Amino acid sequence: RKGKNMNTIQEDFHKDMIDIGVTHTLLGEQILYHAMDKLAEDSILLCCVSKAVYADISARMDTNPACIERNLRTFVHKLWNIDDHEYLDRIAGRHLKKKPTNRQFLDMMRYYWYEKEGVSAHSRTERGCL
Image 1 (tube, helix red, strand yellow):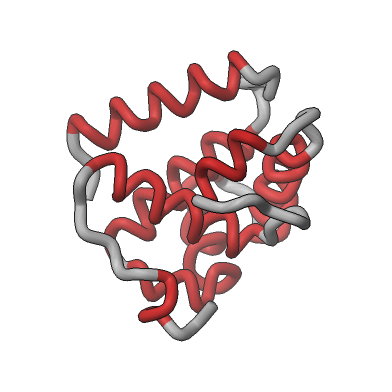
Image 2 (tube, helix red, strand yellow):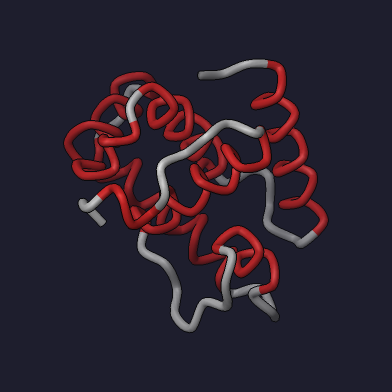
């Protein structure tokens, strides 16, 4: 579900990325937005990120799933390498001890954005695929 609130959340996220020094030219941010749109339609796709989410985004962006995965991984890596992990910790809702995988990051972002939007999201423990 993408509405005015989701657009506002994306705008806020983009501003946050600029504020914390993650360059806005990274494709990973755009890939994240596409992934959030896809996961809003069906959260079970987290169970098959490579085959469903990356494949769909790669078709939209005229590239291949490996390129999508790498760009998202680079984006997560940039977020992780910021001096303190306060922003990622806030998204995760806890202190992270190691860099999240792409799937974990997408799950955290989906939960964080839906909570911010006031949409009832399934709890992490109910999904069973992570």
